[in-house]
Image (tube, rainbow, N blue to C red):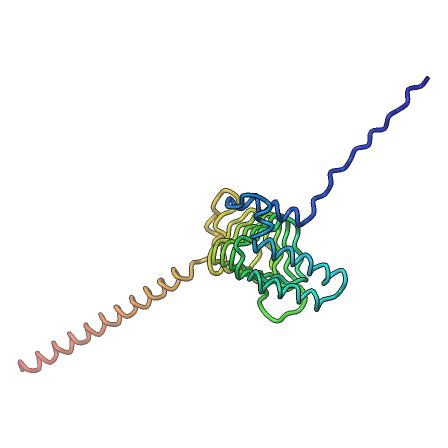
Length: 238
């Protein structure tokens, strides 16, 4: 008898839903989160993302854009977070605190990104088409940062609090300031030619030059006055 060959069926791992990834991201990134039930029940950021995914379905799949906007605006009223139904957001997003977060219509966000309160992923004008930023995977945008225009933020990038980013950011970089500039690439600081000039330093330099010019003019006037006094004294002696 020939041995029967037993075929082993290898089960592929079941892919996690985006909402499950969102829940796990909140649990992983927030040390204050004690359990999943607490996040599901009380986290405004998670509620906003759940409403967004529902609105996105109506906006993209069913083409019911008015209903999608109504859902997003109701969510905004209760959470303080505005996410346009047309935005594309991968799984694992974590919006911490969240009040004041705005995500525009053509914004795209990769997996496992973190946004803090006051973040804006917005446009810079009334242009149509792609007008909002694209974030890669594992991007962190800190509180109050504004990322504006159809720019690309690379994987693992970090945007500092209060920064205004108007240009592309490479992978593994840290950006701070207004306008945003790269202060770290990977684990090292960039070379001097990779940094942008500090506007305050430039302004102080202009003021210093102007003061030096004024000092020179004052010195010249003092010399002229001294010469005139000398002529007057010589005339009185005669």
